[in-house]
Every structure is written in C-alpha cells, then in structure tokens.
Image 1 (tube, rainbow, N blue to C red):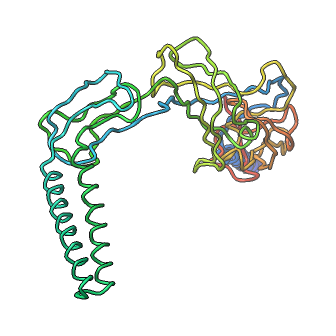
Image 2: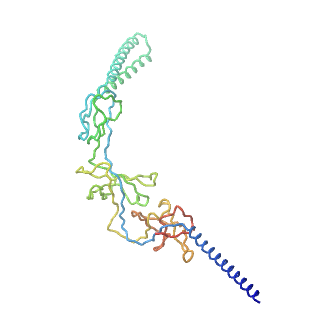
Image 3: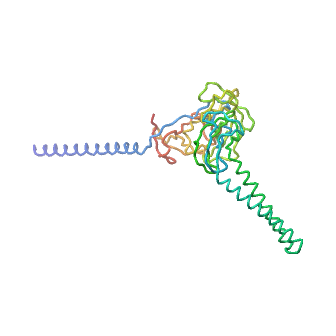
Length: 355
C-alpha cells in the first residue's frame, strides 16, 4: 500500500512539474511575441493637425547685392605706370583709375601707318596706269579696297594706342585694387572692382504657392538683420521659371540713402497683408515626405487598442507659413501625422510614438 501511495505522489509531482514547465513555456512565448512586436515597431515623433488663425503675410530671407558691381580692366596689355586711386575711394563714371604704357600698341600703330602709306601710293600708281590702259578696272577697284582696309586698321590702331587710360564706367566705391605700379597686365585683366551701393538688390527665393501672389513693382517691407528698422523695397524681378531647388528667384530693390547697408548683408522680406487673417488647417513642414510639392504625408492610424500604423496619404497643400504649411484637403483637425522617422517607414508600417 505504501508503494502505491509513493508511486501516486511521484506521478503527481511529475505531472505538476510538467504543467509548470508548459505554462512557463507558453508565458515565455507570449512575452517573446510581445517583445518581437515592439521591436518591429518603428519609433517616430508625431504632431497634430491644427486649425489656426493665420495672415496672408509670408516672409523670405536673402542677401543684399550691389545694384552695380563692376570689374574694371585694361583694354590693352602693358605696364601699369601710374595708379590714381586706392581701396575705399569714391570714383565717378569716366574717372581715370590707372595709366598703362604699351610698346606693342605703338609698334602696331607704326605698322598700320606704313601699310596705309603703301596702299595710298599703290592707288595713285594704279589710277595713273588705268588712264593709260596699263591695269583693268577690276585691279583699280581692288587697290581702292586695300586702301579702305588699311585706313580702318590704322584708325583701330590709333584708338588702341591712345587708349592706355584705365577708366571706371560707373560711379561707386573702389572695393578692391588688384594691381600695383610697375605690374605687367594683359588685355581684359581685372585691375579694380568698383561697387555702387546707392541701391541694393535683395535676392530671395519663394515657392510655387507664393510666387503667384507677387507682382513686379509691388512695394514691400524689408528688415535688414543688422538693423532693427524696417525699410521699403520694390519688387523688380520675378523669375519666369523655377531653379533646380524648385524655387523662384525674386529681386527686391532697396534705396540705401545713408549707406549703412552693405552688399553681403542678410535681410528678411515680408510679403502680403498682416491685417487680413483667416482660419486654416496647418501641419508642420517636417510632416511632408520629400518636398512639399509631392504632397505625401504619413498619417497615424489605429489598428487596435494600442497598435498604430503609418498610413501614407496624399494631401493638397496650400500656402507656406514659415515652419507650417496649409492643408487644403486630405486631413482633418486633430489628425496625427508623423514628423520624424519617415525615412524608415513604408505604407502600413507598425509604429510607436516617442517624445
């Protein structure tokens, strides 16, 4: 009897141990499945679609450039024998900046003069011979053409010989001097840079939603980064086509009366009317996959109580308000969209939201 009881106890212990092992195995399998599911979820950051009151005002940043910026060069090669200006000097249009000496142009002038004299003598000889029948009318006409060409070459050499003065074609400030007295220079070699900053051009770019709201001649507000004051500018150019970044170059002309502004300074141009405001749906600019013009956004979709997936949708975007973009269709206020981590997502990819 004792043996039977002992056997029953042993069997019960084995059964209990087996049950515990099986239960633990199932529990471990479930835990592993949960961990695997969590690891399959891509971590993303999200933001809500919001209904905000915005104005038609938008801004664009750019850099000032001089309206006139000219490299002054010598039209003939030679040695610089005199420099009349230094960096920072104000010069007027037509003012002499330097004087060069060219032996080559003098030689060219002498050769052209000799060729002209020869052509004049040949024509007289041919005219006399023609009267006695010694040359034909065609030969005489050829001599006259040679004289005409020789005269043109002489006139050109005379101009070049006398054109040894390097003059500025615009009024402005000598921004740089790239030559010293005694230097040998080539024709067309830049010697000075003259910049006129009476007017500056602010060069900016706008997107396709903004460019249609601009017009040449429009007066706008410009705020230089180096000044707290706002000044007026006039739109003088709107590019007819986009650049490689799908942006449209725009130029704004600004009067620089007190000469406080300099070429190369940054500024912000403000377009539109700040007094008119309306409620629109907006999302962060970062919500768009690729460029805004592609209109692709990952929307957060619930597939269970705690399960989330990224659903790729197509929206219709509108105006650009700095770091936010207007949504015309495809989303509703309160919808949640992915703003970080899109590079790891495909349509219907499981996700988990992190702060």
